[in-house]
Amino acid sequence: MNNETVGPVLMPSDDIVSLRAHLDVPDLGYVDVATEEAFEAGLRRWPLLAELHAWRMQYGGVAGADALQA
Image 1: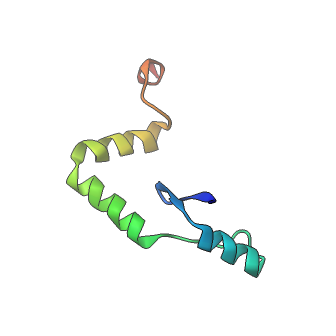
Image 2: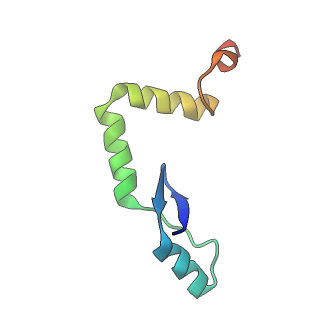
């Protein structure tokens, strides 16, 4: 099974990979709306998750001593 990054979650997406190959459009855009909505709902439900996500978007990577000294 092929996996592809779709939104914030790694999701199996063989159907999309197959469609891209069949149409010969490798850069076909695809957004899993349900996954995006679930992610946004999780950020609203858990404020710490939202804060960590915002930190990661701002600084990238994983929090560590080196990143905190920057």
